[in-house]
Image 1 (cartoon, rainbow, N blue to C red):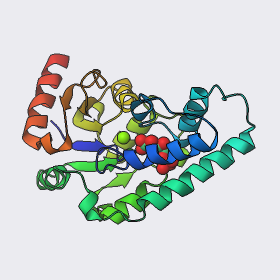
Image 2 (image 1 turned 120 degrees about the vertical axis):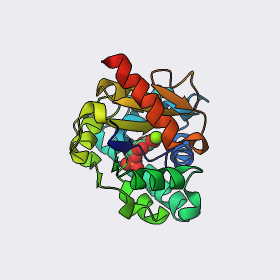
Image 3 (image 1 turned 60 degrees about the horizontal axis):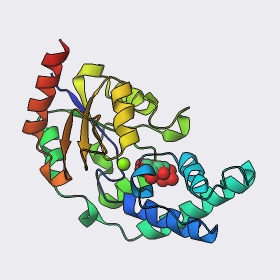
Image 4 (image 1 turned 90 degrees about the vertical axis):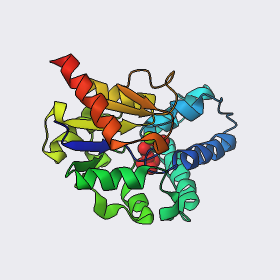
Length: 225
Ligand code: BG6
Ligand code: MG
């Protein structure tokens, strides 16, 4: 039986993925790097440092800087990002999310945030969603970023549930890969060509309906048994 929902944040609860991309574009321009169009997908879900390394690799600069310089670049990007998210309000919650959270609450599902972002608590506060969740994984305590399953395993533990009792929501290919590596039911939001590993895919958060998700989850569980 479905007993809990695990949520990525950026690109799932709100469209902050566009601000991450904008900030990385600004930093890349400062370093004379042009991000290719596929960066929009490839940067999603990756930790701050993994993202920086990817940005540098687009400019063949991955071996050019010391760890101290990289830390300074990551800090600069985060300052730009914090500036961009300053004006966020509950109006920035993506379509369908408020209804989904309300339906999940009515069904007494446990809900945990599995975001790689150290800014997740700030964003949840801005969106007025901080009280909606039973827990938030602290990404500072993780050893590996997505696509490693660690963050989803931790979220499941925080929910106090078994692998087959949760559904996890992602907009990133590496995020879906992390969910599947954790053995959980994956709901992908976005392009099926990118999120092909997911068990159930919708084009947009507006299409997330708890009943439909429960139906797909039950079919997945039956196939497993
Ligand atoms: C993920 C985003 O949720 O968090 C990534 O999809 C981001 O784009 C990562 O790099 C880390 O976020 P932050 O806010 O700690 O730099
Ligand atoms: Mg995301």
